[in-house]
Image (cartoon, rainbow, N blue to C red; front, top):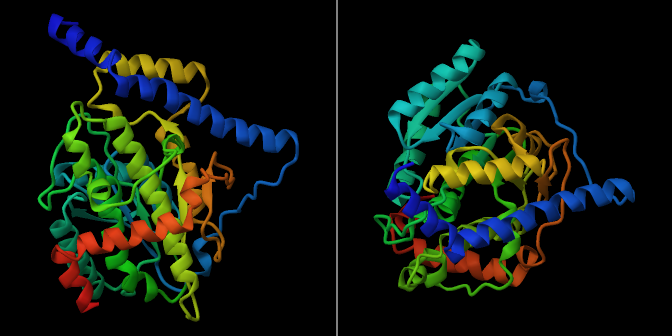
Length: 367
């Protein structure tokens, strides 16, 4: 390790944000596992859901996965391709998209895959993807609909960055992009001849947010830019809480829709998974963190971590508004704040108002 790397590592170690990650995030994941253990020992009913086969779907189903070129997204794409889904892989890098398709094909030659280059922090890029996806479905021999949407894309940025729309990049990628994509794909999800599902990949870190002010400054992430030190751990927690609040508000609104079939939405928490999400943290510290988490027996491989995502994606029709955690179809209660319906509605309205000032507003009027 060079002197420069050592100084960077020391700077991280003694920062409040890294201490927050080391202490509060560790406590949150241990609390989640304790809840699972407690329910099994004392026979408390935390509902589990079986996985349903795709054989009941009359045509080849389509699954869209964001952030699918590595880690959890790649593992989920591989698993769902084996289940017979046409997997639409969404990623930022064209080269990584090609490599991902090759990796999955190496293990499953029968996999049906399609890659789209999309920047999930850019509303313009998401709108272009929606148009391209619909055209591709029309041009193919597939039914023009989507059966599963998995909002998996996420980043942990340790320095502030601004998107083209002026949002914080972490809030833009982890929450705003997922919100916009979901709303734009609702017509394709609603066109499915069978029930369709939306899976939002959230995180146990949402439990660390005990209070939240819902305004455009917070939702866009702009208010965090004024901090002396960018509060990256808290921004990540906020983004995952927002995604969870959005999940439950979308569930509530979809329940009010009168249709012969429904769109169902769930949240999936993969727990602690060894992926490249810590790539902006000094390598020595991320290795140390993974070493400690492995000895606490909470660290998982992407293949194991993706099990909660697959559980949510393949849950029986009618499964909606639940929080999957721990694999084996198990669910858990998220934080009380994430279940605050008033806060969720405020967040929904604030996000819609914010997005109406972008190209999303024009696109939504066409729907």
